[in-house]
Image (cartoon, rainbow, N blue to C red):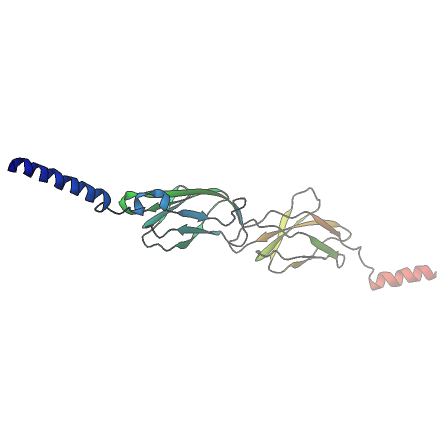
Length: 237
């Protein structure tokens, strides 16, 4: 009888222990065990069409938004390893220097406890430093040997290159590099049409394409004082 009672007690203790494990003694649910609880997002410079135009810099800023559950994040830009962050706030900004125009793949992987990870991938098309030439060049003949050029400034340009040709479809040769938005071309031939183009140069010494061609014609040779006297004498005669 006592042996049977002991067996019953053992069974009862096992049952109580099982109930305790199920109802009271189970480990509380850990949010880290569910990747759905981990949020991560990449905010690109242009979230509408995923295109960014960088005019005066070759640096793009990427914003990563995170949940407090994230322990560390690895950010990749392109096909190479960019950074590993071991201390994370809810939001972080990363500046990435790129070298060429084209598509860039950006990824962020969040690492949490117990090996749970969550990743986010986005792509971005970057047009690197789209320098533009001067939109319009005004030309004015000042004399039989000089032509003045002037144009509106380009915001990212630090210098301008001036090119000249005797034909609008011919070869344009460099004439001068100038800091200002005007240039006076001298030692030209009288009564001759010259064609000009200009380009913009940025702080990294990168040059834009050439502008459209603009022309001006130098004046005829002016009459000297002696020529005027001879002309007047002949006229009087």
